[in-house]
Amino acid sequence: MISQDRLSATFSALADPTRRGILATLMAGEASVQKLAAPYAMTLPGFSKHLKVLERAGLIERSRSAQWRPCRLSARPLKEVSDWLERYRIFWEASFDRLDDYLRELQSQESTKSNSLIKKSRTTTVAAKRRKSGRR
Image (tube, rainbow, N blue to C red; front, side, top):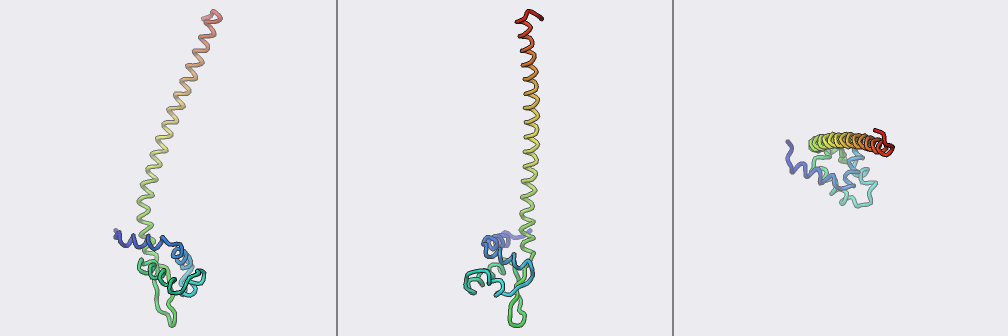
């Protein structure tokens, strides 16, 4: 079981579109801070704050390689979020399946009721015509 604090940190980090964009870029492989920052109109210190949030949440790892610090995606927190969400997906899927079954049952009952009313209406109409014409 993952701690709520770690899960909260992951969701908080994922809440920002810039950080989600960084993660999307890192799906292609590790990248330098400069490469990651290039598409965004912000200062490098401002961009570094986003990286720190991602790093604290465990979503990225940074290492030293000569003069630069490459960033790479860390899948563990995303797997934890996926596992957590899966429990709710299973719950809602089962709920929707029960709702579908219930609606099919209602439709079946309505269809049976309609067929019964149509037959009754036909019988009543035929009997009325017979009475009117004097036949039985």
